[in-house]
Length: 592
Image (cartoon, rainbow, N blue to C red):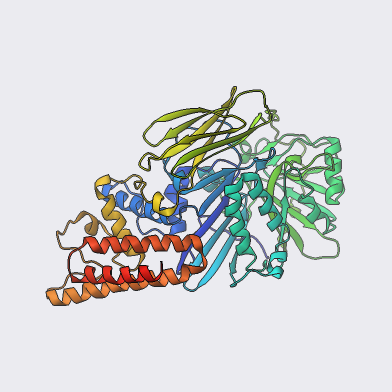
């Protein structure tokens, strides 16, 4: 690596690629408005945009809703628990499609890693993209902060190999521990990611550095193996170090305290006024070198002057004796005992993940001016509560609630909120409760758990199978045109006409073709074009079915599409839809 590259942060499909599954980890709670308005449209490659115009807005939500419906159970977010009820989100329906999990099912933990993973299907091949960064799923992380990250793209082989599995080092144990901490449903999702990783080898020159709460797995082990002679640190938060923990961390990483260089700012630096940078311990007198971060510091040539965003990047530059190049750790970990641990008596309390790579970039090392008066803030002394983890799920028949608290003597209750404003109150016994609920048109949205003055709010994880999940109305769409939108985007999915305003709202008044061709003057020609377009859709569906046979979840989804296409053609009049329905009926029978 010669130096950092300046790039956009929004993920987008590779050329010709369609998303098969996505995983995100974040510390701060994911913001629905960011996902709905920016991240998901980019990730899914939507053809329509969010607009103030009613018709375009309707097509946007129709396209987004049908795309997310196809990916139901395949977009996963893992975060730390939300300690209190948040403000009513703008798009509360989103969490029916995107599953949110939190860590802490067995013991207290903080999820601070920022890992994104995307499984793409590109023709007959598959690709896995990995992104490790400092970026939370919040609007401020995208718009008001500078982030540092690493991205890798992997071509997936046909099968899992032991060599590929072992090449990932600490990443797979990290994912296994994360899945266990987030509960059985999350573990099932993360295990699918692990299986994909084992179909490709880790990129050459890349080492994953991870910390796992409460275990002997901590990031300092990877750094110490490099035997660094000095380390230069740039993070926006420095934790509450004591003389003992600092000495222990210095020993853990194998660097003397006076060879630890912290890059920090004074009270006049623009970043000191953004409520982002927090030095919770004054390290003067503890031998750590404090180097001043100038106001004009730039991470790359593309970093424009006057950029008001503050740095949320977490960078550790290691100088290795006898090597001209340095090792750079790009990570989620701030410099704190919570992130790293400190000695055998202070284990890490956070899930943290980073990537270590070789570089000739030395900007941090070149910042050598001594900082005599650092910008400091008071330490937040708020401790962990007793109510530490909760989960709510719904399978279409029953809502299941579970919670874990370190206080066994105080009762835990929960309030479940539904899409029509209804609320149901339950008391948990032994950390468990259940409620019968069989109304697909009124899905449960959130559950607020309470114990004394403490609360935890979670989204209800929708576990319904695709056939049942499809009964849920499309979000933000007039119910009178939901059926037309579903049909139109289903046909588009398999090569039919691209959905536009005229085809849905019927401005032209023309008869809509059944597959893909525009009307022709000669009816016999039109009938032939209709039949050709319809059979093109059928062939496209058959191709998708053949490719899905190695993926049970995808196979179920494609089969459901086939039944929906069959019903669509049965509803339409004319020889072309009749022939298409007959052909689909035969193929569905053959592939049952």
